[in-house]
Length: 283
Ligand SMILES: NC(=O)C1=CN([C@@H]2O[C@H](COP(=O)(O)OP(=O)(O)OC[C@H]3O[C@@H](n4cnc5c(N)ncnc54)[C@H](OP(=O)(O)O)[C@@H]3O)[C@@H](O)[C@H]2O)C=CC1
Ligand SMILES: Cc1cn([C@H]2C[C@H](O)[C@@H](COP(=O)(O)OP(=O)(O)O[C@H]3O[C@@H](C)C(=O)[C@@H](O)[C@H]3O)O2)c(=O)[nH]c1=O
Image (cartoon, rainbow, N blue to C red; front, side, top):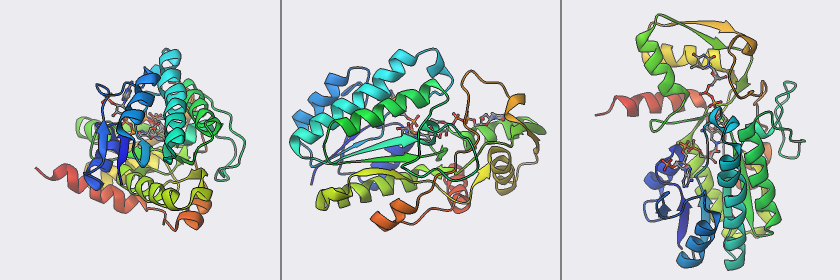
């Protein structure tokens, strides 16, 4: 079976490479998502049995100023990938985000809940979801949240850097979600892809995030505690941390459908954090 993955350097793509070294991985130089036709052409050339898209425009604040580019990468390219995969009869696994929701309330979002993105990144990711569904092939749209890993850029690495430089930080305490290890997302994508190859009826939209739900402030405290850093965290409301892009307050995802359909279990971010800190210490 040939698996074709878009992305080589990102957090999830890196974990996919580690978990599935025999898959074909395409970086920006082989398939630029800013040129959606090059993505469709790559699928036609490789004729894979399964396609996973782990590449995206993920700079949430910058997307406010570059929404057209972000829309091409996140909104148009996944649709062309899904069309090309459907043409071959290959299932397509696409990763999306909690930022398609408006963040209201405290109830975890179910896959069927109404979407209402609050920022440009969320709008472009929603456009990608719609394009993948419109392509009409066998697919899984896997929405996840707050991705963390030992690679690339993420909140854990930002906190380790700032926590080593400063005695105290102010961190938003009213945004709550599940910090999800890229390693678990990669394993879920491979498992879901495998199931879709055998059972096309499992096609649909799914949620996958780590548990228990936590605020960014409490997550920062856990990072400092487990990393042995002496940095105090003061809770602040989102209104005291202005950013170009609005972030949803409630990023909790209801993952029950994913667990039922695919037999996956929800990762615990606390053990994921320990694994990431250990990996960062290794030479
Ligand atoms: N990061 C997060 O917190 C979350 C991410 N997600 C979603 O999960 C998926 C994986 O995210 P993550 O691993 O964190 O991403 P990263 O930000 O770690 O990496 C993004 C990847 O996309 C590639 N990429 C960006 N633009 C292009 C382009 N024009 N052509 C080809 N490749 C491109 C990058 O390549 P290069 O190195 O060349 O720039 C990089 O490999 C994405 O769909 C994202 O939207 C969902 C929820 C939370
Ligand atoms: C550095 C810092 C951040 N913060 C806040 C800002 C923000 O609300 C929160 C997290 O900051 P980040 O910039 O890491 O988060 P952000 O880039 O918005 O993370 C998002 O990325 C995209 C790709 C997704 O899909 C989402 O699921 C989510 O993971 O922490 C503080 O309150 N104090 C600080 O000192």
